[in-house]
Length: 77
Image 1 (cartoon, rainbow, N blue to C red):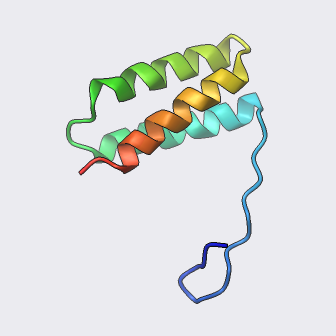
Image 2: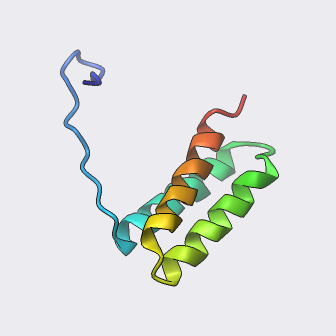
């Protein structure tokens, strides 16, 4: 289990495949894109596809793409 700054375990975050979670992930991707000077083009494609899929009711596929985009952004040098 991950630990917080005080050595206490952080509570586990439970997520579900909902349109609300899609929106949350899309916002996280948008915020992360602002902090990376030149994100790879694949991030934009994944984020756009993820948002489109979530908007069309394909929540699970949208979440997968948004998570992948976020992972790529967080691992940018």
